[in-house]
Amino acid sequence: MEFTVALPSAFSLEYTLESGQLFRWEKRGEWWHGVVKGAALKVRQEADVLRCSTSSDLADSAFIANYFRLDEGLDHVLATISKDSTIARAVQRYYGLRLVRQGTWECLASFVLATNANIPRIKKMVSAVCRKFGGSFEFEGDTYWTFPNPEALAGASVPDLVECGLGYRAPFLKRVSESVSAGKVDFATLPTLGYEEARKVLLTELFGQKVLLGVGPKVADCVLLYSCGKDEAFPIDVWIARVLAKSYPRLLDPALKRRLVRDGKLKLSPRDYDRISKSARKRFGKYAGYAQQYLFMAAREAGA
DNA sequence: TAGCAGGAAAATC
DNA sequence: GATTTTCCTGCT
Image (cartoon, rainbow, N blue to C red; front, side, top):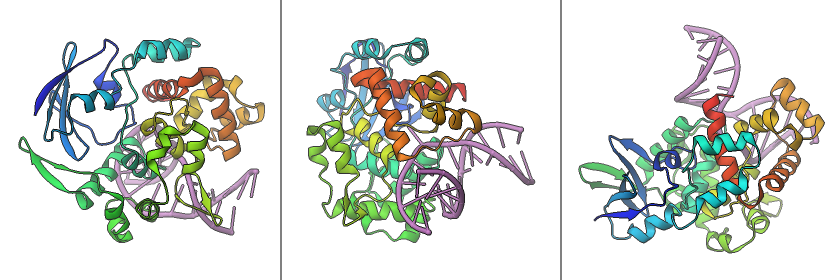
């Protein structure tokens, strides 16, 4: 099925797909190839439309508009978060970058793999897992693999997951898959809950044991921001920690600032994480998550 | 609660 | 080619 979707002026497919919120989009020539809703989707940004080609009627124009959040006014968001010159520069540089609505399961599983890895590596791991445990199909001469469902990964052996290059992350992914396939987390209700409540669900402990082993504050924030529409979520990774230390020292305690700046210790205790995340929300407002995404891009480009 | 291990690939020197 | 870093969390 081929069709076009009208685009708002503030939209950059390139920045959106390369902003580290998604790991399965690949650019081949003029087209971006991806898999959404178990369907192959090829997209290309033209003047004021998004040209689409998809293997399934499920990925129709309404789905695309919802996925890329095209009905939302980005300029209002960017005006709201542009509180200072640092963020304003990042916003100008990556203008058009949008947060998307990706599937919660895929988002959660992907970010469980993201610990101590860089983006190219995360993409490799996710791709290997899909090839090994997802379903394959052909579309316009290319082979695509669906993202495996929780049951498929729960049934995987740890050695098979290790073969995908996951290393120590293999048992975490298996445990998370088991919990999800056992119905211990209700993804459907997350978007209806407030940020704090939804976060508690992802970090729930039962009998002193976490339901989602391998999911800490950072991964939880990524899932809430990228897949549950919680735009105030402010995930703090090493890049964001560096930006905060360099350009937003006032958001940090003096002691924490010294630790971050002095010996580049970018590890935050859960307490520190929550405090900083909260002050970031206070500064950037209800769209703090967008601020995080633009700052992340700018920080990575600067290499510091 | 602070410190550390974890596994392998990418980035950097 | 060796070393450091990498969108972190769990355990002690």
